[in-house]
Amino acid sequence: MAADEQLSEEDLDMLESAMRMALGNFEQFNGAPYIKRITDRLVDKNIPFTLAKIYNHGDAVCFPWSDGDVVCHHGSYGHKLGLFEFIGADFLTPEELKRDSVKGNVTLEDAMNRIENAYKKYQERQNERSGQQQ
Image (cartoon, rainbow, N blue to C red; front, side, top):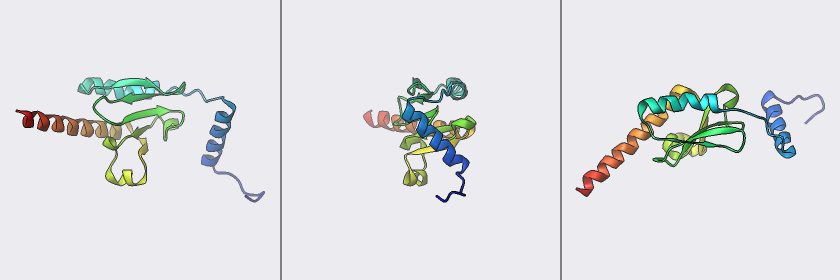
């Protein structure tokens, strides 16, 4: 990098995060208010979930019926904007899975659509299995 070049905002954020981790000084980020927006809707829709802490700086919504979860923590894509990150094939499109196993910067509405669609597919699989057992 030339002396007169400047780092982008994204590069500066990544550098700051790397320095904090190297020094053991994690930014205190509270994802709970953002995660609560999802869990309130999950309760209303009767979709099973559990909550988990991610280290000391965020939260995850885990689904006992899925291989994935949704997070909002210091390292998740979109956390500074109160957006969510999904982990797991149940919540990603085939195109997204070709690029990565996570999808970040997800809005609340998109998050709920992904969860509801994945849960509906799970229920359909369960109904097919119980029909085959009879």
